[in-house]
Length: 228
Ligand code: ADE
Image 1 (cartoon, rainbow, N blue to C red):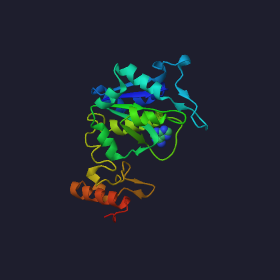
Image 2: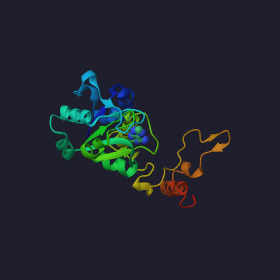
Image 3: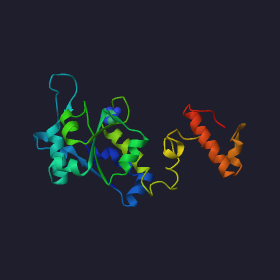
Image 4: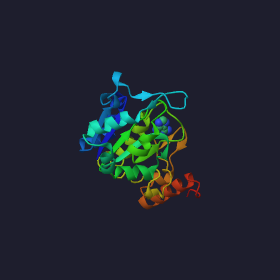
């Protein structure tokens, strides 16, 4: 999979890209390319934003700047780019990211993430240049860099080879294997600590009982039933 991230702060991704599961995904042939809007803007002083029409606080990322960045980076018209790959604008008002959306995006061969800044994008970016608007939750952050990393992280975990153990992503929270429910609790050594004991079933070596217990725990956490 190839993911291109448009941002004002490419260096903000350095730490994230060095994380093991991301590095594994990159080593397995997946690709993340970062580009700065400032490197493509045709405005003087490398301007990328402007004050909002109608007044109000903050600055808005300009539609002509995002258009120039897409055109410059891909070497063709942005509307063509939009037809070829999903172009995701990260905005607090977008479709809220969940496991189903992460799975959907992870299945794409190529993806473009547009990070906003300040008060966000000129709405025409979302309307005309992007195919999707995605939010990581109903709260407003100062920029789209953390949301882009959240989306990348959720996707990277689903790519073959990213996690050490192939099953790790199959049975994690909100996956189909757990009926869309939250993940069951995990325990590791010591089996007993300060009198806090690991549930006996997990030490039993009885795989079918363990599987049933975990599913019951997941259901209980979802408030859909009692744990067994
Ligand atoms: N940009 C600012 N806040 C955001 C959010 N909650 N999700 C996605 N992008 C954002």
